[in-house]
Amino acid sequence: MIRRSEKIKEGEYMSNSKVVYYNLDNIDEEQAQINLIYGERSNGKSYQVKHKKGINPYIESMEKAINERKRFMLIRRWKEEIKPEKIEQYFIDVDIYKLTKGQYNCISLYKGKLWLSNYDPDKKPQIKRGDYIGYVVSLSTEQTYAGASYLDVDNMIFEEFMARGSYLPHEPDKLMNLYSTVDRKRGTTRLWLVGNTISRVCPYIEEWGLHDILSEQKQGTIRTKLIPTGHLNDDGTEETIKLAMEYCKSTGTSSHVIGTHKDMLNKGAWQSDPQPHLPLSYNEYEVMFRMMFKYQNFKFIAEYLFDYEKEYCWYIYPYKGEITDDMLVISDEVKLDRHWQRNIYNIDIDNITLKRLLNTFRENNIFYSSDLCGTDFKQVIDFEILR
Image 1 (cartoon, rainbow, N blue to C red):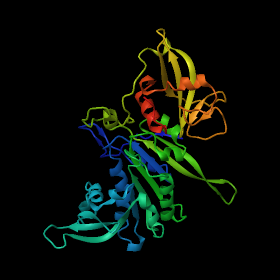
Image 2: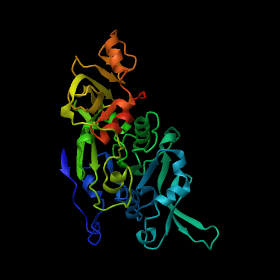
Image 3: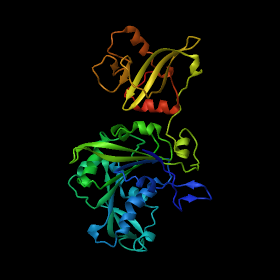
Protein backbone atom coordinates (compact mmCIF):
# COMPACT_ATOMS: atom_id res chain seq x y z
CA MET A 1 0.00 0.00 0.00
CA ILE A 2 1.08 3.56 -0.66
CA ARG A 3 -0.51 6.90 0.03
CA ARG A 4 0.53 10.50 0.40
CA SER A 5 1.26 11.88 3.86
CA GLU A 6 0.55 15.53 3.21
CA LYS A 7 -2.07 16.42 5.81
CA ILE A 8 -0.84 19.39 7.86
CA LYS A 9 -2.53 20.22 11.14
CA GLU A 10 -3.26 23.78 12.19
CA GLY A 11 -0.20 25.22 13.91
CA GLU A 12 2.17 22.96 12.00
CA TYR A 13 2.38 25.20 8.94
CA MET A 14 4.00 28.56 9.52
CA SER A 15 2.97 30.94 6.76
CA ASN A 16 5.68 33.50 7.53
CA SER A 17 8.66 31.20 7.04
CA LYS A 18 6.83 28.53 5.00
CA VAL A 19 8.06 25.70 7.23
CA VAL A 20 6.16 22.42 6.93
CA TYR A 21 6.57 20.61 10.23
CA TYR A 22 6.15 16.87 10.55
CA ASN A 23 2.73 15.54 11.59
CA LEU A 24 2.57 12.11 13.25
CA ASP A 25 -1.19 11.74 12.70
CA ASN A 26 -0.72 10.52 9.12
CA ILE A 27 1.24 7.36 9.93
CA ASP A 28 -0.69 6.90 13.18
CA GLU A 29 -3.86 6.39 11.15
CA GLU A 30 -2.33 3.24 9.67
CA GLN A 31 -2.48 1.62 13.14
CA ALA A 32 0.70 -0.32 12.43
CA GLN A 33 2.44 -2.18 15.21
CA ILE A 34 5.90 -1.14 13.96
CA ASN A 35 6.44 2.36 12.55
CA LEU A 36 9.61 3.66 10.86
CA ILE A 37 9.80 7.43 10.45
CA TYR A 38 12.78 8.96 8.67
CA GLY A 39 13.67 12.21 6.91
CA GLU A 40 15.63 15.41 7.26
CA ARG A 41 16.94 16.61 10.58
CA SER A 42 15.00 19.17 12.67
CA ASN A 43 11.67 18.65 10.92
CA GLY A 44 9.71 17.85 14.08
CA LYS A 45 9.79 14.01 14.03
CA SER A 46 11.07 13.60 17.58
CA TYR A 47 8.93 16.46 18.86
CA GLN A 48 5.75 14.83 17.56
CA VAL A 49 6.59 11.31 18.69
CA LYS A 50 7.64 12.16 22.24
CA HIS A 51 4.54 14.30 22.70
CA LYS A 52 1.86 12.18 21.03
CA LYS A 53 3.21 8.72 21.92
CA GLY A 54 5.02 9.56 25.13
CA ILE A 55 4.03 12.48 27.29
CA ASN A 56 0.51 13.34 26.16
CA PRO A 57 -1.02 9.87 26.78
CA TYR A 58 0.27 10.00 30.35
CA ILE A 59 -1.01 13.54 30.90
CA GLU A 60 -4.42 12.50 29.59
CA SER A 61 -4.50 9.58 32.04
CA MET A 62 -3.42 11.56 35.14
CA GLU A 63 -6.94 11.46 36.58
CA LYS A 64 -6.74 7.67 36.74
CA ALA A 65 -5.12 5.72 39.53
CA ILE A 66 -1.32 5.64 39.35
CA ASN A 67 -1.25 1.96 38.35
CA GLU A 68 -3.68 2.62 35.46
CA ARG A 69 -1.75 5.44 33.79
CA LYS A 70 -0.26 5.11 30.30
CA ARG A 71 3.53 5.16 30.18
CA PHE A 72 6.12 4.83 27.44
CA MET A 73 9.66 3.60 26.94
CA LEU A 74 12.44 5.66 25.37
CA ILE A 75 15.20 3.57 23.76
CA ARG A 76 18.69 4.64 22.80
CA ARG A 77 21.36 2.39 21.30
CA TRP A 78 24.25 2.80 23.74
CA LYS A 79 24.40 2.94 27.51
CA GLU A 80 26.37 6.20 27.30
CA GLU A 81 23.35 7.82 25.61
CA ILE A 82 21.02 7.40 28.57
CA LYS A 83 22.82 9.59 31.06
CA PRO A 84 20.54 12.11 32.83
CA GLU A 85 22.03 15.20 31.17
CA LYS A 86 21.48 13.75 27.68
CA ILE A 87 17.96 12.46 28.29
CA GLU A 88 16.77 15.56 30.12
CA GLN A 89 18.08 17.67 27.23
CA TYR A 90 15.94 15.56 24.88
CA PHE A 91 12.84 16.80 26.74
CA ILE A 92 13.96 20.41 27.06
CA ASP A 93 11.50 21.54 24.34
CA VAL A 94 8.50 20.10 26.19
CA ASP A 95 6.42 22.71 28.05
CA ILE A 96 5.68 20.56 31.10
CA TYR A 97 4.41 23.54 33.09
CA LYS A 98 1.71 24.18 30.50
CA LEU A 99 0.83 20.53 29.94
CA THR A 100 0.38 19.86 33.66
CA LYS A 101 -1.35 23.22 34.26
CA GLY A 102 1.40 24.42 36.57
CA GLN A 103 1.72 21.26 38.64
CA TYR A 104 5.24 20.46 37.35
CA ASN A 105 7.88 22.36 35.40
CA CYS A 106 10.32 19.75 34.05
CA ILE A 107 11.13 16.09 33.40
CA SER A 108 13.97 14.43 35.27
CA LEU A 109 15.64 11.03 34.94
CA TYR A 110 16.22 8.97 38.05
CA LYS A 111 16.99 5.25 38.30
CA GLY A 112 15.94 4.56 34.73
CA LYS A 113 12.59 6.30 35.02
CA LEU A 114 11.32 9.63 33.69
CA TRP A 115 9.67 11.70 36.39
CA LEU A 116 7.40 14.72 36.31
CA SER A 117 9.35 17.07 38.51
CA ASN A 118 9.69 20.57 39.89
CA TYR A 119 13.03 22.30 39.68
CA ASP A 120 13.83 25.16 42.03
CA PRO A 121 17.48 26.26 42.24
CA ASP A 122 16.85 27.99 45.57
CA LYS A 123 15.65 24.88 47.39
CA LYS A 124 17.33 21.76 48.75
CA PRO A 125 16.96 19.40 47.00
CA GLN A 126 16.59 21.38 43.79
CA ILE A 127 14.55 18.60 42.14
CA LYS A 128 11.34 17.35 43.68
CA ARG A 129 9.84 14.38 41.83
CA GLY A 130 6.19 13.51 41.42
CA ASP A 131 5.01 10.44 39.48
CA TYR A 132 7.03 8.75 36.74
CA ILE A 133 5.76 8.87 33.17
CA GLY A 134 8.05 6.40 31.43
CA TYR A 135 11.28 4.41 31.26
CA VAL A 136 14.66 4.92 29.58
CA VAL A 137 16.71 1.93 28.43
CA SER A 138 19.73 1.23 26.24
CA LEU A 139 19.46 -1.43 23.56
CA SER A 140 23.05 -2.52 24.19
CA THR A 141 21.99 -3.83 27.61
CA GLU A 142 18.54 -5.13 26.67
CA GLN A 143 19.14 -8.49 28.38
CA THR A 144 19.26 -6.79 31.80
CA TYR A 145 15.60 -5.77 31.49
CA ALA A 146 14.28 -9.26 30.71
CA GLY A 147 12.87 -9.93 34.17
CA ALA A 148 11.16 -6.57 34.64
CA SER A 149 7.46 -5.81 34.12
CA TYR A 150 6.39 -3.03 31.76
CA LEU A 151 2.70 -3.78 31.43
CA ASP A 152 1.95 -0.06 31.76
CA VAL A 153 3.85 0.69 28.52
CA ASP A 154 1.82 1.18 25.33
CA ASN A 155 4.47 2.83 23.16
CA MET A 156 8.20 2.27 22.67
CA ILE A 157 10.22 5.07 21.02
CA PHE A 158 13.61 4.23 19.52
CA GLU A 159 15.48 7.38 18.56
CA GLU A 160 18.17 7.47 15.84
CA PHE A 161 17.58 3.94 14.61
CA MET A 162 19.65 4.79 11.52
CA ALA A 163 23.14 5.08 12.96
CA ARG A 164 25.88 7.49 11.98
CA GLY A 165 28.41 5.10 13.49
CA SER A 166 28.30 1.38 14.13
CA TYR A 167 25.33 -0.82 14.99
CA LEU A 168 25.12 -3.45 17.69
CA PRO A 169 25.74 -7.07 16.69
CA HIS A 170 22.38 -8.64 15.77
CA GLU A 171 20.67 -5.36 16.61
CA PRO A 172 17.18 -6.12 15.19
CA ASP A 173 17.08 -9.28 17.32
CA LYS A 174 17.96 -7.25 20.40
CA LEU A 175 15.13 -4.81 19.67
CA MET A 176 12.65 -7.65 19.19
CA ASN A 177 13.80 -9.26 22.45
CA LEU A 178 13.22 -5.96 24.24
CA TYR A 179 9.84 -5.60 22.56
CA SER A 180 8.88 -9.09 23.72
CA THR A 181 9.90 -8.19 27.28
CA VAL A 182 7.66 -5.13 27.25
CA ASP A 183 4.66 -6.48 25.34
CA ARG A 184 4.45 -9.88 27.07
CA LYS A 185 2.31 -11.38 24.28
CA ARG A 186 -0.35 -8.68 24.61
CA GLY A 187 0.06 -7.54 21.02
CA THR A 188 -0.89 -3.99 22.03
CA THR A 189 2.50 -2.25 22.29
CA ARG A 190 3.45 -0.05 19.35
CA LEU A 191 7.04 0.56 18.29
CA TRP A 192 8.21 3.88 16.84
CA LEU A 193 11.62 4.05 15.15
CA VAL A 194 12.75 7.60 14.40
CA GLY A 195 15.80 8.55 12.35
CA ASN A 196 17.47 10.86 9.87
CA THR A 197 18.31 9.94 6.27
CA ILE A 198 21.88 8.95 7.07
CA SER A 199 22.42 5.63 5.30
CA ARG A 200 20.24 3.10 3.52
CA VAL A 201 22.58 0.35 4.72
CA CYS A 202 20.66 -0.37 7.92
CA PRO A 203 20.16 -3.76 9.64
CA TYR A 204 16.44 -3.13 10.18
CA ILE A 205 15.91 -2.59 6.46
CA GLU A 206 17.70 -5.85 5.68
CA GLU A 207 16.20 -7.94 8.51
CA TRP A 208 12.60 -6.93 7.80
CA GLY A 209 12.88 -7.10 4.00
CA LEU A 210 12.26 -3.38 3.41
CA HIS A 211 14.96 -2.62 0.85
CA ASP A 212 12.60 -2.63 -2.13
CA ILE A 213 10.33 -0.14 -0.40
CA LEU A 214 13.16 2.06 0.84
CA SER A 215 14.95 2.24 -2.51
CA GLU A 216 11.80 3.46 -4.30
CA GLN A 217 10.01 5.50 -1.64
CA LYS A 218 9.48 9.18 -2.34
CA GLN A 219 9.45 11.98 0.23
CA GLY A 220 6.01 12.66 1.66
CA THR A 221 4.73 9.09 1.31
CA ILE A 222 3.80 6.25 3.65
CA ARG A 223 4.25 2.60 2.68
CA THR A 224 2.97 -0.40 4.62
CA LYS A 225 3.87 -4.06 4.66
CA LEU A 226 2.44 -7.16 6.36
CA ILE A 227 5.24 -9.31 7.79
CA PRO A 228 4.55 -12.92 8.88
CA THR A 229 5.50 -13.86 12.43
CA GLY A 230 5.68 -17.61 11.80
CA HIS A 231 2.70 -18.19 14.13
CA LEU A 232 -0.57 -19.71 12.93
CA ASN A 233 -3.89 -18.21 13.94
CA ASP A 234 -6.72 -20.39 15.26
CA ASP A 235 -8.23 -20.56 11.77
CA GLY A 236 -4.97 -21.87 10.31
CA THR A 237 -3.95 -18.62 8.58
CA GLU A 238 -0.49 -17.20 9.14
CA GLU A 239 -0.26 -14.36 11.62
CA THR A 240 1.19 -11.09 10.35
CA ILE A 241 2.09 -7.76 11.86
CA LYS A 242 1.67 -4.46 10.07
CA LEU A 243 4.71 -2.27 9.51
CA ALA A 244 4.50 1.31 8.23
CA MET A 245 7.33 3.41 6.78
CA GLU A 246 7.15 7.16 6.31
CA TYR A 247 9.71 9.18 4.37
CA CYS A 248 8.86 12.59 5.78
CA LYS A 249 8.01 15.45 3.51
CA SER A 250 10.72 18.11 3.36
CA THR A 251 10.22 21.18 5.53
CA GLY A 252 10.95 23.29 2.47
CA THR A 253 13.52 25.39 4.33
CA SER A 254 17.28 25.37 4.62
CA SER A 255 19.34 24.26 7.61
CA HIS A 256 21.89 26.88 6.53
CA VAL A 257 24.69 24.36 6.10
CA ILE A 258 27.15 23.76 3.28
CA GLY A 259 29.48 20.97 2.31
CA THR A 260 29.28 17.36 1.18
CA HIS A 261 26.14 16.44 3.10
CA LYS A 262 24.20 19.66 2.61
CA ASP A 263 21.35 17.97 0.68
CA MET A 264 20.75 15.56 3.54
CA LEU A 265 20.68 18.34 6.13
CA ASN A 266 18.77 20.87 4.02
CA LYS A 267 16.39 18.65 2.06
CA GLY A 268 16.26 15.22 3.67
CA ALA A 269 18.05 13.49 0.77
CA TRP A 270 20.02 10.36 1.58
CA GLN A 271 23.49 11.13 2.84
CA SER A 272 26.11 10.37 0.21
CA ASP A 273 29.77 11.15 -0.38
CA PRO A 274 31.25 12.34 -3.70
CA GLN A 275 32.18 9.40 -5.94
CA PRO A 276 34.08 9.18 -9.25
CA HIS A 277 31.91 9.18 -12.40
CA LEU A 278 32.73 8.03 -15.92
CA PRO A 279 34.93 10.60 -17.69
CA LEU A 280 33.01 9.97 -20.96
CA SER A 281 29.40 9.27 -21.79
CA TYR A 282 28.42 5.65 -21.11
CA ASN A 283 27.50 5.24 -24.77
CA GLU A 284 31.13 5.81 -25.78
CA TYR A 285 32.24 2.62 -24.03
CA GLU A 286 32.00 -1.02 -25.01
CA VAL A 287 31.11 -3.63 -22.38
CA MET A 288 33.74 -6.36 -22.24
CA PHE A 289 32.59 -8.22 -19.12
CA ARG A 290 29.70 -8.05 -16.67
CA MET A 291 29.27 -9.44 -13.15
CA MET A 292 27.18 -8.75 -10.05
CA PHE A 293 27.68 -7.81 -6.42
CA LYS A 294 24.99 -8.83 -3.93
CA TYR A 295 25.32 -7.81 -0.30
CA GLN A 296 22.41 -7.81 2.11
CA ASN A 297 19.54 -6.85 -0.23
CA PHE A 298 21.62 -4.50 -2.38
CA LYS A 299 22.44 -5.63 -5.91
CA PHE A 300 24.92 -3.93 -8.24
CA ILE A 301 26.08 -4.61 -11.76
CA ALA A 302 29.81 -4.14 -12.38
CA GLU A 303 30.85 -3.77 -16.00
CA TYR A 304 34.37 -3.83 -17.40
CA LEU A 305 34.45 -1.16 -20.09
CA PHE A 306 36.88 0.19 -22.64
CA ASP A 307 36.69 3.30 -24.83
CA TYR A 308 38.02 4.20 -28.29
CA GLU A 309 41.43 5.05 -26.80
CA LYS A 310 41.65 1.54 -25.31
CA GLU A 311 41.29 2.85 -21.76
CA TYR A 312 39.76 0.26 -19.44
CA CYS A 313 37.70 0.83 -16.30
CA TRP A 314 34.98 -0.64 -14.08
CA TYR A 315 31.51 0.89 -13.93
CA ILE A 316 29.02 0.10 -11.14
CA TYR A 317 25.28 0.80 -11.05
CA PRO A 318 22.28 -0.52 -9.07
CA TYR A 319 20.47 -3.60 -10.37
CA LYS A 320 16.83 -4.53 -9.76
CA GLY A 321 16.47 -7.59 -11.98
CA GLU A 322 16.83 -11.28 -11.29
CA ILE A 323 20.15 -13.04 -10.93
CA THR A 324 20.63 -15.50 -13.77
CA ASP A 325 22.61 -18.73 -13.62
CA ASP A 326 25.33 -17.48 -15.97
CA MET A 327 26.21 -14.43 -13.84
CA LEU A 328 29.35 -14.29 -11.73
CA VAL A 329 28.16 -13.05 -8.33
CA ILE A 330 30.41 -11.67 -5.59
CA SER A 331 28.37 -11.90 -2.39
CA ASP A 332 28.32 -12.39 1.35
CA GLU A 333 25.95 -15.31 0.77
CA VAL A 334 27.50 -18.76 0.70
CA LYS A 335 26.20 -21.07 -2.04
CA LEU A 336 27.42 -24.36 -3.51
CA ASP A 337 27.63 -22.74 -6.91
CA ARG A 338 30.86 -21.89 -8.73
CA HIS A 339 29.23 -18.68 -10.00
CA TRP A 340 28.82 -17.42 -6.40
CA GLN A 341 32.12 -16.25 -4.95
CA ARG A 342 33.11 -14.62 -1.66
CA ASN A 343 36.49 -13.03 -2.49
CA ILE A 344 36.74 -11.04 -5.71
CA TYR A 345 40.54 -11.05 -5.49
CA ASN A 346 40.82 -14.80 -4.94
CA ILE A 347 37.94 -16.60 -6.61
CA ASP A 348 37.60 -20.35 -6.44
CA ILE A 349 37.48 -20.77 -10.22
CA ASP A 350 40.37 -22.22 -12.19
CA ASN A 351 40.50 -19.51 -14.84
CA ILE A 352 43.67 -17.44 -14.90
CA THR A 353 42.28 -14.95 -17.42
CA LEU A 354 39.26 -14.23 -15.22
CA LYS A 355 41.43 -13.91 -12.13
CA ARG A 356 43.67 -11.39 -13.87
CA LEU A 357 40.63 -9.44 -14.99
CA LEU A 358 39.17 -9.28 -11.47
CA ASN A 359 42.54 -8.18 -10.13
CA THR A 360 42.03 -4.91 -12.05
CA PHE A 361 39.14 -4.07 -9.71
CA ARG A 362 41.08 -1.28 -8.02
CA GLU A 363 40.02 1.93 -6.36
CA ASN A 364 41.54 4.24 -8.98
CA ASN A 365 39.82 2.31 -11.79
CA ILE A 366 36.20 2.21 -10.54
CA PHE A 367 33.41 4.64 -11.44
CA TYR A 368 29.81 4.83 -10.19
CA SER A 369 26.49 5.81 -11.72
CA SER A 370 25.77 8.25 -8.87
CA ASP A 371 27.16 9.43 -5.56
CA LEU A 372 24.45 7.49 -3.70
CA CYS A 373 25.26 4.31 -5.63
CA GLY A 374 28.94 4.56 -4.73
CA THR A 375 28.18 5.37 -1.11
CA ASP A 376 25.77 2.43 -0.78
CA PHE A 377 28.26 0.09 -2.46
CA LYS A 378 31.18 1.00 -0.24
CA GLN A 379 29.09 0.80 2.91
CA VAL A 380 27.47 -2.55 2.18
CA ILE A 381 30.39 -4.65 0.86
CA ASP A 382 32.39 -6.62 3.40
CA PHE A 383 35.81 -6.35 1.73
CA GLU A 384 38.34 -3.58 1.21
CA ILE A 385 38.79 -2.39 -2.37
CA LEU A 386 42.46 -2.62 -3.28
CA ARG A 387 44.36 0.41 -4.51
